[in-house]
Length: 316
Image: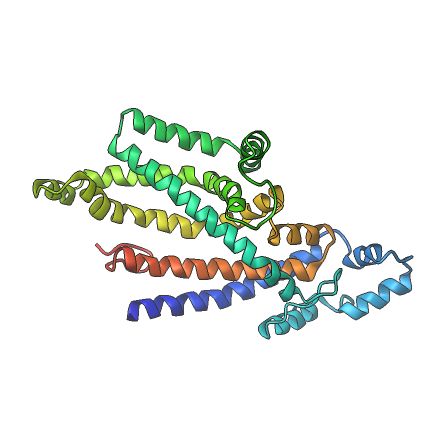
């Protein structure tokens, strides 16, 4: 319990530091990025822009003040859970993101489930049958998965299972069937490195002395793999998952657009195209917070897999 509280405290401190650093870098990059949100706003409103209009809007949104003053005012609002207002839609940024966030999290969870349903069996298969045809099949699938771009794989799945076979819906979010193709696309894109890592770790574990001792005690192969070898071999997968959460969330954006998924993907792409800085900054902050909390869950999961693990490394 004390170890878990220590991990939670450490992660919360990291969250605070991360928000400060990430928010400043994001804010600065938004100001240095080519493009003018005021001109984008005038274009959306279909106004005949004049210098007076631009100056009025710059003053209204605080763009006429020094960057550090703008950042301080924005950070003060963030500290009060106010991410500002969209320049284009005039809606609160937090409401816009929270309206799309559940769909993105649901798809991310679906991709994680698909990832482990693909990677764990193939990794075990490659380790148990090392050097034989199941091992070659496992490695071939991993190589093929790593070679195919996720958007191309998604288009292939749409063509086969929606256009040709008419088994699955192409777009939107509604039933469980809508989750299948986006989740599989996301899972396959991430699975190859997990397959290789689990295979290599399991091969090393199966050759260790305590596995030989378990075999000498007459334990069945399935019990040895499930309760002894696999439990310890999952630790590097959990570590890698913590490191790749950011990539997973980034990959979701592409998949959402491809399958017209009503998540944050379309929102952030439109915001970038329209130079809607408050939405972009709010999105980056929310994703950063999600990554930190996901890594916190990963650290706590270490204690479930092996209570002897100290934070960040195994106890000897």
